[in-house]
Length: 257
Ligand SMILES: [Zn+2]
Image 1 (cartoon, rainbow, N blue to C red):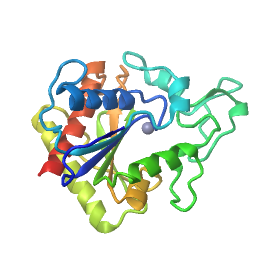
Image 2 (image 1 turned 180 degrees about the horizontal axis):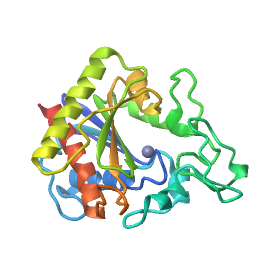
Image 3 (image 1 turned 45 degrees about the vertical axis):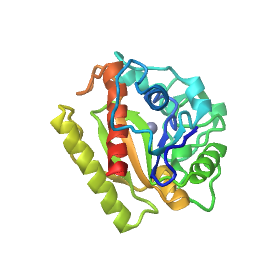
């Protein structure tokens, strides 16, 4: 969806559900829509930095095939439980992670949340001249139409919260901007008692960079904790959504100066 603020104000793109086993992204997007519509998220929390003057492009579920296949939550479970669903399990019931390439759905008992139903590893689409999956093509076309300044993509893992700077296709000045923005988010998180990983790693293998090459937006990726008990961040559902909303809120503050 798009939310129109003032025409002379910047635009934030927020994307969830690239990976099916990371349901906090879609949930956070719907909470963002609630804040924009009613001034509060779905549990009643106001986020005063998420202001209606900004413009928003929100894609809650970028990979609906995968979202429809896998569980809605791993809160209170173990990392091992995620491993059945992220890369998926082959016909022998063993985890099958082909790495950064596609997989054959016919060879899978559980097709993982990384893939669309055709087995395409859509988050590894990084050639702007040859985007193969319908999901990334549609996502980039819709997002580019609204010319965002920053694009935030929600992801999740079984570790503490972490920001990643997608680096392929991204020039040095934008890389510096990513580090500066993520550094400020990490500092602000620490001041509010949320411990983000301090280092902001650069990843050179993500479709997330296409927001820059196809849309001109500074791409930022947020890895939320999944709430698994055997991690150092066994967050509750509430903490997970608040973390996503916090990052969104910080980016709104960046755009409003
Ligand atoms: Zn992910």
